[in-house]
Length: 78
Image (cartoon, rainbow, N blue to C red):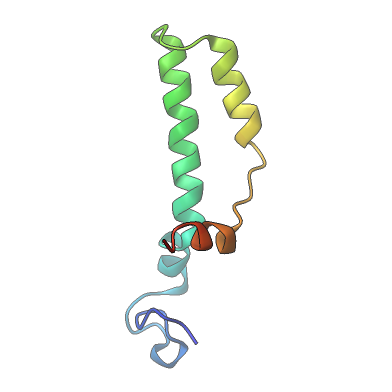
C-alpha cells in the first residue's frame, strides 16, 4: 500500500501513468539532483570557481551513486 493516494494501485492510471510515476519517483528526483550537482561542478570549474580536477572528481564520485532511500528517510525524521 502506498502513502501517496495518487500512486495507490486501486486507482490504476487514473491520476498518473506508469511513465509519469517513474518521472516523479523519489529515485528520479534524487537522480536529477545528482545530475544538477555534476553540471554545477562543471560550470564552476569552467568559471574558475573550483579546480577542474575537483569537478572531475565530483563527476566520477557520483557516476554510480545509488541512494539509500531508507537511510535518507531516517535522516530526515527529526
